[in-house]
Length: 117
Image (cartoon, rainbow, N blue to C red; front, side):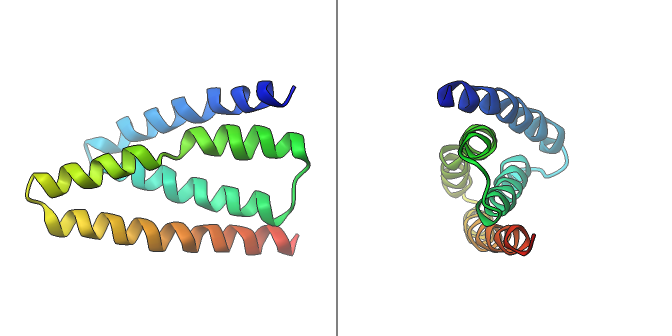
């Protein structure tokens, strides 16, 4: 049953990531805004879920499935590398640093909000 919940969450998270990326791609030039936004939002949501805490089934559906498919470390890494290789070294560094700092801050804020409930 758990694997079905993970698959269901992923079936929603992955298309949402794709649609977000497509919607934001034209607005940000070479900066990978779509991946940046979904990774920060996913960190916030996962922190919130962990802070609650949620039952195992909800964690599988929303945490592992939805957040796992919504966020993407591999795309983040590839986009940072691509920016670097294209000579946009400052933009690449800014992407990595801001993603890390804001992702951690979002997870912390989400956790604090969830724990407060």
